[in-house]
Image 1 (cartoon, helix red, strand yellow):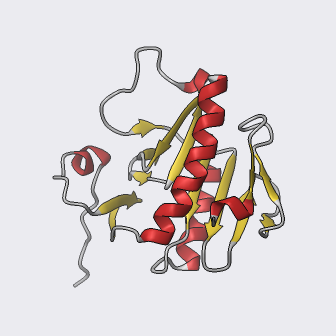
Image 2: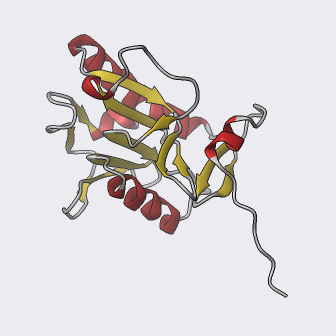
Image 3: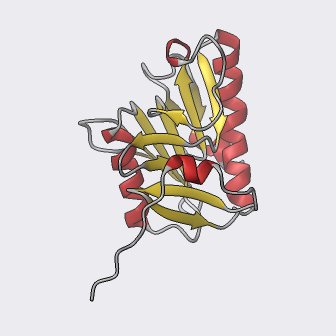
Length: 182
């Protein structure tokens, strides 16, 4: 006899207690991840410092760490990139609503952790792009590289000698890849 797995909704996920675990939903299946380490946290903070200063000074939108984005419904897929950006014209005039953001970010940034599997990171990139994210940046602290992914384009692989360009997603934002790992 086959066992049927119970799927979870974003509302059920939202109601779970805070216990330090990072959680996402993939087609209703709960995925838990351990807290991240120092190198991961430093890479996220180095990007955040640059991106947030640029976005805030120009009032381009909001930069947010680990916000849950509902990418698909019924069954629900909710992803929480390490860092994300949503354009000002896509934000509610009333301010942030309780719960998770309904829709995809304009920019999602994922920093690869030692426990991440390459296939899972690729799946996240496909999910973000498929839901309407205009740019996904994948940072690999082990290799000290960055992959910039855009819909309909091959990923752009950058080493420490290159600069990330926000292009039309975050106009004017530039970040030397080496600064992520400083």
